[in-house]
Length: 475
Image: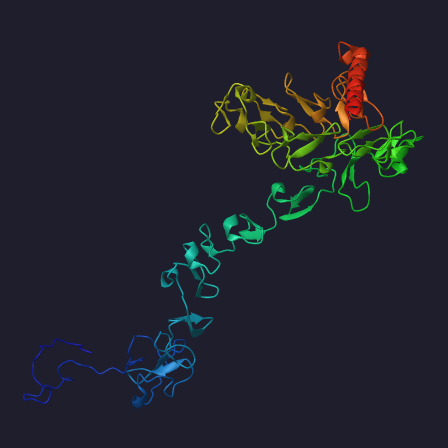
């Protein structure tokens, strides 16, 4: 250390004239720390006053070179930490191709695949495992599917990446049995991505698994049968003086004696093939619930009808609701689907877009309506479509209020009809101009229903008899 003025000179220290450094103002100080080092790091990081030498013959050689574990003999013949890709870990070995980076993990160094995103080809390093596990595209993943929101490999992003008839639950990115009711067989609904029988009052039998209205319950009429909406399964569920007709799930004053398909109605006749079920011991019908109809059909007052209505729409006969309360149909089941609107009348003051089938220019109330109300385009109302009403209810579009009355038999259960007098659902099969009859003949025409009344029926019967006799004579 120079403590005074000094003029530099360019000659060797032993070349005359020899200059005495002490007399020239230099002072030799003993350093508190004096390490010869290769990389500027202390040999023992937590012990700055400690310096350990090693055999110069081991300098830069693989292994510990006489130093403690995790230390090596560096080029300066000093023990230094093994913290590079060339010298890493307790044994100070070079890192391999699969784990090319040396990382200090919990105070010990070891070779890892990555310590930061930039060291991964897909730009994603999992710092918990120090492995490249993320993805930027599907080809980065062994599963063939990459979730681009989280940059992680997943089982699926769409149905095409699933097999064995499963579909992709996109919220889970997993292949499951179902994500909606339409993925399940008839009489089953989708719950927790699994198809299960419709067996609760708010999800009962039928193509659409609709709820049970008017106090009815969901139960199977016979062991092993699919459940359906019934009034009772035992007489204890009926009022005093009544008993349960278990064949039809109905509380009655007395169970009819002829109440089977082989013996039905007052005449105790066999039901024909096209109407194989006996309803209440009174009349043979084509169906008593949706499950007794074919695909794309539902039970409407004892008859199987095509699923082209708001409450039974499309191949699964699902009830339209929510933002798509109307059924747009071309008259066929396959051509029927639930939409936001069919025409302008469905949009209040708005306009129905014929391309998207959604209401446009319908006002601003849609964003301010309270729960339980919907925007009809001008105001928040209880309903403007039947789908907005609770189970068993219909919407009075004149008042935009839900009511328990029916407008047609489609608002009723499969074995009920809408009474023209009371506008309430009543038990029994009845078409306009007809009344329930017993036996295989099913329905008889009332005198008020046709201009000719019973005389017309007799004339038709006479013509039929003559034709039959003529055919027999011809033989």
